[in-house]
Length: 228
Image 1 (tube, rainbow, N blue to C red):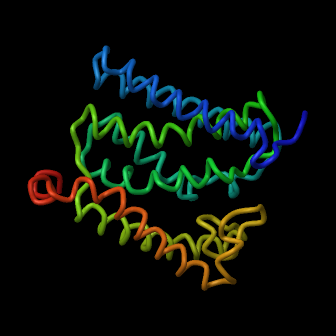
Image 2: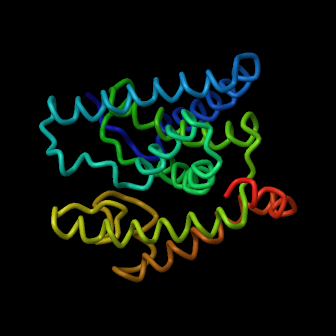
């Protein structure tokens, strides 16, 4: 099995194909029962993710402590699936703002194997689903990102980061990369040593998430009381 190469032709095919698939499924969803489509899609993604984790544990022998859903994209996936199942506006706020992390994961993926390895396919399918779910919530559930959602999602993420820091310390893991810089190539390599890179990431997070809130800012007060 060939290894995956960052920024290779294959990598760009995954990126282009993934965004094209998101666009295609948004178009398809417009012609189907929207809530049912959301539920079915969430169920399919849940099956894919559970299959991936089972494969990693039973075939590769990865320990359970390394498969916990405590990285940002896995946490976001939980909220995204629940949002698609329940049509919850509060869960949408978290999904929308945290889904930005999927873009960085797609650009600098932590994958080892080339197409069509099931782990690589699962990685891209589940990460692009986060983007799909965020867009789906805006278009079909008619949810709108709010300023309060921006603030709450940031505070919630930091509370989880503190908890996960202590979990990492006990398990020897590095979920959310709050204990050390990841072992693979990532943008964090350029943000300084621990804990300085965390402060840089926090600043970038606030700027970028506010940027994706900005187009909806005029409707903040209209939706904030409705969705919280």
